[in-house]
Amino acid sequence: MIEPVRIEANPPVSTWSRVARRIRVPLSFAFAIAYVWLAHPTRESLLAGALLLVPGLVLRGLASGHVQKDKQLTTSGPYSYTRNPLYLGSLILAAGFVVAARSGWIPAILLVLFVVIYVPVIAGEERYLRNTFPEYDDYARQVPRFLMRFTRYGNQRGEFSSERYWKHREYNAIIGCIVLLAILVVKMMLWPTT
Picture 1 (cartoon, rainbow, N blue to C red):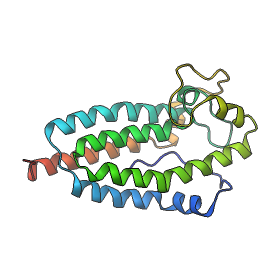
Picture 2 (cartoon, rainbow, N blue to C red):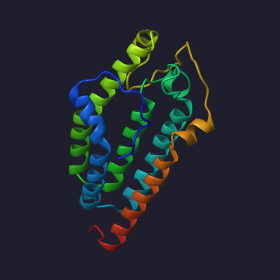
Picture 3 (spheres, rainbow, N blue to C red):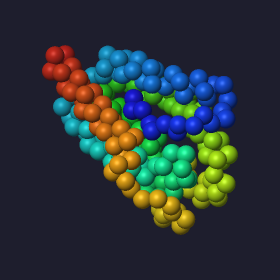
Picture 4 (cartoon, rainbow, N blue to C red):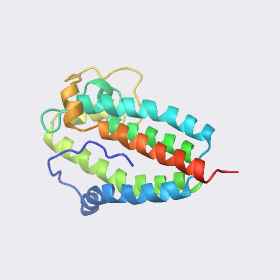
């Protein structure tokens, strides 16, 4: 649903990874339509889901302000705790929207999309980073792919930049969340769940 910050170079990846990378945005829009159709929001589910969106947006925003695509291996900020804070933030956002929607189909569809689309994309990005930055292997051994370390990675490089945040257009994630929540509110008001 939320587009992660893209690595701009063309990493050496499998054919499916390239295809997955290309179709993930159009597929996200198709999923958003199915999501709204399948959702059965209530006031309580919307509030609980919206509360879950906050940490996902914060994590994505911090990560976006730290990442320096193609210039250096980013190991500062959230990247000192997890190798994929943008994807982890997106998973937290997805969890928030799952709670907001109250539909058993949505988590199943999200799981399939994640495995079929995002796992190959992440693998391709990791191959690119490994080939581009010699220090990536050491970083990958010490920092988990998705889960978070309890302590910061010791060899941090970089700092948060609001300029990078704006350049990466991470504010679109906030706008997207607000729009989707507004659509769910309208759906709840027009077609209340019993």
